[in-house]
Length: 310
Image (cartoon, rainbow, N blue to C red; front, side, top):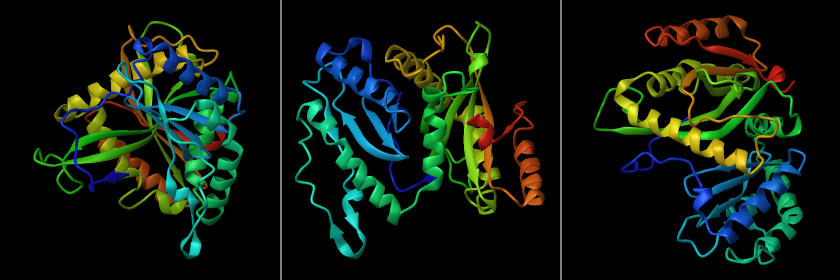
């Protein structure tokens, strides 16, 4: 996915909470949220952003927790008001919600009501792919012997150029990557660690066009291999090291011994498929995508969605 409707930042952001340096009160709240997610049986997902964190429910953003910094007087919980909108211009009453600065326990207490509101919104606006991504993201919390461990969801990177002019140094586009994941077996050891930049494709209509396989492969290749966007790649690698360490501290990577600080990370492309029946079109798209990486010496990993959940 590519966005051109927002302006690029002056510097590439790094995803981290600076957890070790936070005040004890904010640390305690973040740990409480993490424990609640861990004990939710996969209903919720915890993802670190730059000085904030997102809590997802079925792929929808339940909370954004902001004001997480060394100088902060306390974290604040925010919600997306779009989930309160219904067909016909109806807007649900939200006066029951705590204020953004209210104690965390007040927010935890109203989660069942908030879940019902999101469930009803999803009834009117189904988001099947988002829910599939959510299942992949939390699978390692449910199954601590899963083959895959997802380190981040919806990673965003600013790359130079537009779709038609990839090398245009005067313009930038925001590219969104579905998942960053590792094989659990690769986490042990000290050698180079493959981290997979992953895109999920569901249905025949998802493999071609502006958001198809080759389009995403071009974005991946530019991020992974192109020296023009080395700063974007550096920010991604630093984000992986910092956020993964913080997730491990918070207990969000159970049954892993991942320490990325001293390990060389090699980014690799991967695509995940579900319900693709047009095998001829898929085969052609795979060939085109792999050709994009011919100068990068990086083999694309092709995966089935159901197998990743095994």
